[in-house]
Length: 382
Image (cartoon, rainbow, N blue to C red; front, side):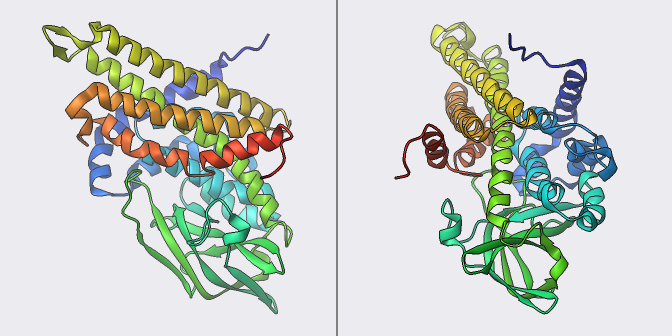
C-alpha cells in the first residue's frame, strides 16, 4: 500500500519553511511586490537555511537531501508568495542543477558551493524572442569555436534570476553546428553580454526576469557544459525535473488560496452572518481544497518516480498540468470569495491571482503538457 505520509525529517523541513514563510516572508513581501523589488534579504535568509542546497550532496556544499525536499520547500513558500518561491525554484532547478547534472569536475568545484549556499544565483538561458514552445525551431543564438574560445551571438528572453546583484552566470543554449545545440556558461559581466532592464510583469513582481543579448561574447572553450551537441537533451531533462518543482509551487499557491479564504470567511459578514456559513461559499472552498489535494498527490507521485530512477516524463507533465490548473482555478475562486477586496493588491489573493496565470505557461505550456502525455500514451505526433 502506498504511503504519502511525510517522514519526521521531511515534516520538520516542511514546518520550518512554513514558519519562515509566515514569519519572515509574509510581513514584508507585499511591499516588495508592489515596488517590484528583488527580495535580497529573504534570499540571503533562505541561503542560510540551506534551501538552495537542499537536493545537492554535502561535497558540493549542499544539504544532502533530494528533489522532493526542494518541492516541499517550494510548496510552503508559495502558500505565502510565488516571487520568492520561483526565485528558489529557478536558482536550484535551472541555475545550479545543469552544472550538477552535466558540468565538469572543475565547473562543479568552481560554481556549486556559491550556488548551493545561496551566495550566488545562476540562470538558464533557453527561451528566445522568436520561439517559446518550439525551442529548436525558434532558436537563433549561435556559438562558434575560435581556437580555444566560444564566440556567442544572439538573444534570450524571459530569463529568471539573470540580472540580480548576486547573479554569477547564465547557462546559454546555442547552435554550435548544423542542427547541433550545446550549452555554455557565460559569466555576468563578460564583455558583449548585456543584461536588459527588468520586465514590467503582470505577476511575480518581486522576482527578477530579463532579456539578454550576446554580441560577439567570448568565453573559454572549457565553459561548455557536458558534451558538445547534447544541449537539447540536457535541457529536456532539466525541464522534466523542473515541471515537478513548478507543480509543487503551483500546489502551494492553490493551498494558499484555501488558507486565505478560510481566514476571510470567518471574519466577513453578509446579511447578518459570517459568509462561511453559506453553503455556496462552503462548496467553493471544498472544491478548492479538492484541487489542491489532488494536485499535491500528482506531484508526490511524479517525484517518487524521479527519486526511484524510473521514467517520469509523463507523470511530471500530468503534475504540472493538474497543479497549474488548480492554482488558476483556486486563485479565481478565492478572488470571487473576497469580492472587491480580492481586487486589491494589499490582500494576498490579489497577488495570487496575478501570479497564477504564468504557471500555465512557464516551463512548458499546458498545451505542451497535453502533447507530452499524448505521446507517452503512444499517440502519433500531430
